Length: 82
Length: 403
Image (cartoon, rainbow over the protein chains, first blue to last red):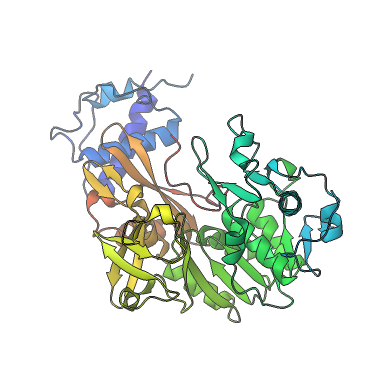
């Protein structure tokens, strides 16, 4: 399912946090992006989406914004290659 | 076409285009229309068409790429005598067309007296800068070395157009090269350690940064090193020949070549005897749209006013950030591009070309350090490493993200 996307998000979020000298807490599908669960801000989130597009070749936001608040909701926006 | 050699072409002028060689006799034999629209993909075709249109007293449109359906005869100004219309290098939408009086195109030529010069054409033959190099070489009776472009091009060596230009430059021992800073960075990489004793190194079309000027001065110690500042509306404004980026702040009080310079809200404004009359205000001032900042006795270019992008509510200049990255040891070239973001509107991303053997992890650390004092919105995110940076037809970096 979305396990590989979830792993990709965890890897890249970890890298973004490490670049800022932060340590990412254990990530779950219910971890919320911008309300204090995670040590990231909106620029970090924007960076994550650019990196995910570079790595998956997909841009789920091409046609406009789609609502997501948690790691699981974001992962669900990407289709997993078979 | 047959006819007399135009007075702007010296009898000794020769053009080498790939494997072909042209003098006036060979150019005059090329089948080109006397005026109208031509595809400006080869210097031979452009020079022959300019000569034919001039002889027939007709307007000529030099189309970049295949002339599109929007190009009509009206764009060549039929019935209004000889003129040359050029297309801008805009990467999106319909190109802008600008009609030039040929006498004015030629009037801008300078430094044509170099005997025995061998020029390399790095610009598109349909571009203003390309035409200037071609006319300069033609007037001086120089040798002009070029490679065919676009659909006319055959197999390119790995590394593309710049690698082929480097091969041609060495094969024909060129002495004069004019190109964009982006071209020069790629050219230095393509040339490697190969011998190429140049007499003249000219940069234009983009702001020249100090690390590049230093590398060029070291690589070509014999060469006259100049960077040219020009704007679309005002034409060529000044040349800086002291090997330093930007220009002397003292020019605000006393500018060369009959110019006056001033800064309004961080933007450079000029008053030039060569500016198009309809582009200036009542006092003769023209805004260049180029941001400048003072550093000591120097004014440095800091990107385009219309190149500012909004990142999460903060206006940032991709070019200014790029200049910082270019100054990092181990960076051969860098491009900072704004990509659209659903979260922050835009985001700056950077593509880095490392010098051979550079340690990527150390380079990442150094690149982060050099932007650490910028506002977070202005720091480039998502650093990607690449072997080269693609250039537009005008030899410049494309500033906006593709997606």
